[in-house]
Length: 330
Ligand code: ACO
Image (cartoon, rainbow, N blue to C red; front, side):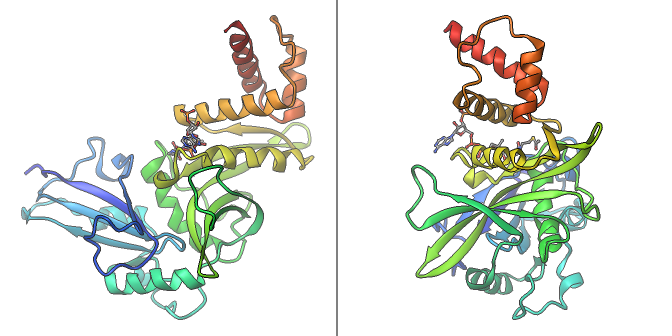
């Protein structure tokens, strides 16, 4: 009864394609989920199918998605798939079908008809615009085309169109961040920073979702805020190109200019995130001259002073000093 060769595949679709089987199509980027245990159990297995493939396609801008699955054979008692997954996916089309495909609102969320999905991808290319306030942009130093620029947007749950959009992107947290849970979108204190790639397509700006991070302001005694990064994600096709580092760095200047923020912390950072955080904090503090003439032992007051000035935790600053001392040993 064990499923053979089963796979759950994600793809972001930039252009509607006549043939979704064309593996050479650059406009369809496939990637696999990192985690499915929250949905399919600890062993991450689906029983009762032969050669099962579960596909979740996302329009690369609006993140409207299309669910489909295929298999060679199925046992009568095979596991249910969509009914189990649907709790983790954006609301199904039935709940949103009142929205018109021609209207200005987002397209229906989950679509089970590839032709309708193709229309949405096509429509996105002309109509989808990021939500929130644009707070900056950058180009990659290498490897990206002249016509491509990356933009940051800041949003909260009361930002127009954002709540709907957030319901779509939250499923990525479940599939790509170990131990993530869906955040409470009725709490208006959350701040979300989004990154989009803007591509100039013959004079038309087309947007593709790159990643996001969300942050929650906690109280810092007596009258300030500790901003805690909760989820931080760059979609797999955009990883290892510097976007995570850029997104993280963008927080320095933002938090630096907000006197109410005392400190930036991170909830359960994993190894990849900690690595990225260390490298960027080291670069930031080195460029600011913090480690000039650094010598052991480092006084507790020095760590506290640097932490306060750069709005980092004392623990993280101590770690960076340690790294700086080790670097000097080399
Ligand atoms: N070409 C090649 N490599 C590059 C380039 C480039 N142009 N630019 C940067 N890199 C390298 C960096 O040097 C770094 O490599 P190193 O670790 O060997 O030094 C590596 O790429 C990663 O740096 P970025 O590209 O800036 O980071 P990325 O965009 O891949 O984001 C992140 C890192 C956020 C961890 C991402 O991989 C991700 O989203 N993973 C899945 C979800 C996840 O684990 N999120 C964090 C969970 S913890 C939390 O949410 C609080």
